[in-house]
Image 1 (cartoon, rainbow, N blue to C red):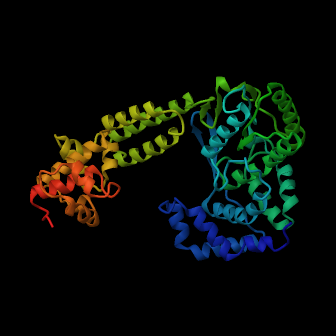
Image 2 (image 1 turned 45 degrees about the horizontal axis):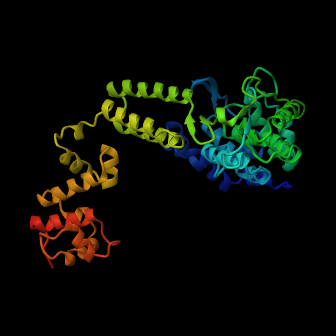
Image 3 (image 1 turned 45 degrees about the vertical axis):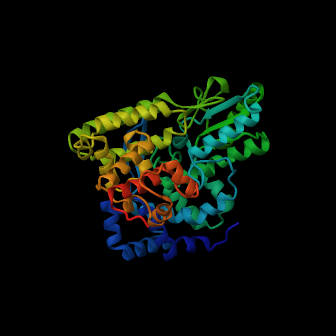
Length: 451
């Protein structure tokens, strides 16, 4: 348990300054951050005074509607309140982190949706005996979770581990700042504290599933969870018990349409993917959502409102995400569309393939990166570099490190030497055929003296 010094630690200048840095991360150029930072010491001192004397009052939330693809109301706190949220989580999160189960994957360091999917793969192999027997999955979703969290229950759960009443007071202030249709219920989507409180609240479910039901293969991500087992009947029984536990203990309910037992061979939707025995597909609604975003970026690009680089950055993130499914052909088609619909004016001004390679090389791209960018073989890129060196348009010293060149040069007896003969003289692990070809091209150009 934690003693009465916890709130003083929360209000300390050191913790508030650390909280500010965390709240500012990724937002340093936002006007409200710049304004707050311009009088940082004064603002942090004011926050500390308000917290210590219990005069702190959160400012009203700014709400907006987000449709991606379902409609959700997102509420954003004022920046000064976000600093307070980080200050609170800094001191109480470590207390609860020790109680959280391993397989709770939302809003925790070292976790996340992709780790949850990897864990799903581990569990499905165990339950199915490496895909040799039937595997069933209880896929469940809590209905209107963030809107129905009960404040009194949540604060009682926090009070079990935090004995400093002032911390409870602050948590209550943050919760009551959210106005919902039912008094004493709900948390705003978009707040750091909401993400943390969500784990505290549903840790009760985690403990029930793991220690009362003794389910071995359970994964939760916020209000979505799955349990894998070889018995459909056992999962149906667990579903009923979980439903009763949520109703009686946490005043929550399972979503009637999204909570059911499924055979893995038919696919189970989880965290944006549809998981099967041997593969994983991106869900169609996720693909449709990105397609809408892609078309919007096309319109903005044509209107000159966004740059090609910003589109490429978003595309790179999406490709990294879908690469966790069986999406090779989809990713290749998407890259082709990007090159076609977001043309690089500088690169497309060159008529010949070798010139395009030279342009990209001068931008600092490696042979491998050029090959990926242009969708050609890496060996083709190396042949372009060799040709450019041979025609004195590129120095071999810009392509290869000096040490590598000095290792290859003594092994070349004449310009008619074959690459395989030269490589035999060089330790085969020390230089590739492509690297030797570039050095030989440099000799033929007369740019490198034979030593």
